[in-house]
Figure 1: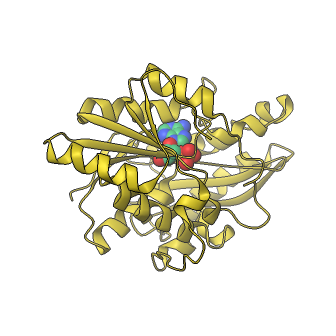
Figure 2: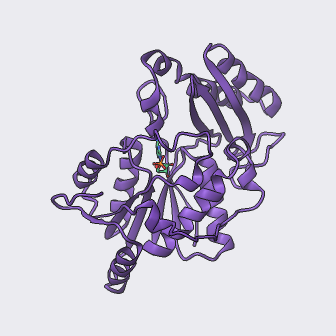
Length: 297
Ligand code: AMP
């Protein structure tokens, strides 16, 4: 699979990665990990830059994790652009890339999974059964293999962030989690590897998710505190766009992902919708979201 390229070091076995990270840590250098599924875009690269600013050595990982895809989801067609990803990582001066095979991550007979109770069934977890079990399992394995001091995730996947922060606390994992703001296209569409699936017509419709979030934010800024009304106004914006089918539109506590009935500072407005057959997600934190959030170890 991976071919060597000029300056990035590509590691494809957990054993090699583990011993290399041991060397890095014992030399006193701070190691940052940016987990991805590849098909890298500016959203991913913003995480690499943040990691470079905070760490001495940055390891990216590229692994399209079969465990987090449902049987009728897009695992097979998920975009895989390994060579160009390597060039982008080199341009960002990322020095290590962990890119294991599925067999290396899940050898035959693997039977252990990590499950974060309750919150894994909320938001995306409700419509994507088993998704967050797959995420929690692969992230735990990546943390064990790479042993980063700090790991970087995007606010784009807000439910994933809540689950990983819960996981780190519950299992006393020795890693600091840094969450970076959502990077958007100029029309507001959140960058996503899945945007590549959109036809030109669907691409024009897709910013409706962001417009719906902005409508809610504006009403909240104007003093509306009733979350049922706010949700209804967001849903109405989505309904204006034919060909876009809502999955969920919710206002929740960003840590527990439980719905809130009265608006409070820091509430998370989250949306998922199908544009054609492509499922897109987006969100905004109502207390002026977008800032870098850091959790204590
Ligand atoms: P993925 O490759 O989709 O698994 O994403 C890898 C990481 O990049 C996750 O932590 C995502 O939340 C983050 N990410 C994806 N899209 C964006 C974006 N538009 N802005 C910021 N971070 C993002």
